[in-house]
Image 1 (spheres, rainbow, N blue to C red):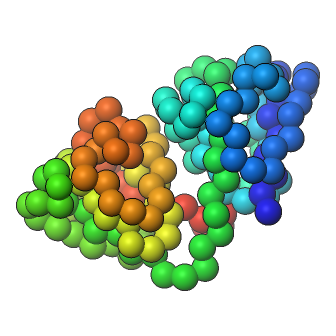
Image 2: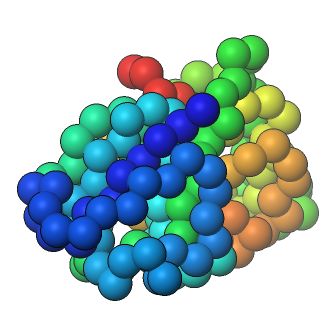
Image 3: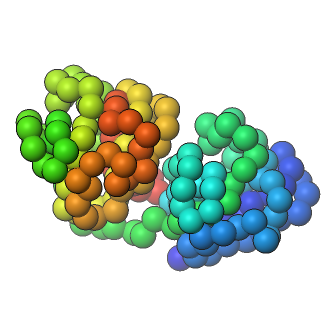
Length: 175
């Protein structure tokens, strides 16, 4: 069971809202979000309702301002708890849409996809096991995208604005 607390002001001040499950629209609970405390579970938070816009992966800990979760502003409008996964992790990525072109399979985090895969872009992927986070830049930086088990025939299927993937990480609450 996960628990996340959103605060309207920095340093855990102002009105707060506790959440322990997915919420597609947080707007009625607070007007802005400037700090977050994750008490349990890994979470994805989203800039817009219905799990759209910028995405941010948060594990257990305190985030006293939006810079601590690499946020651009105080707009957090939806959140999703990442389910616990104890088994193996496995994802296959492809250089082209519809699972075409050069494939590469990963079972562990990769800080620099280009060094491993030799491509800067990933056009499609299949998540076989576990939950994954794609990062636009190497070393787990830049825009983030949450991927659940399933097929992603093109990068827009995971909410990306382009096909650049610099690093990828298993979505876990411990590192």
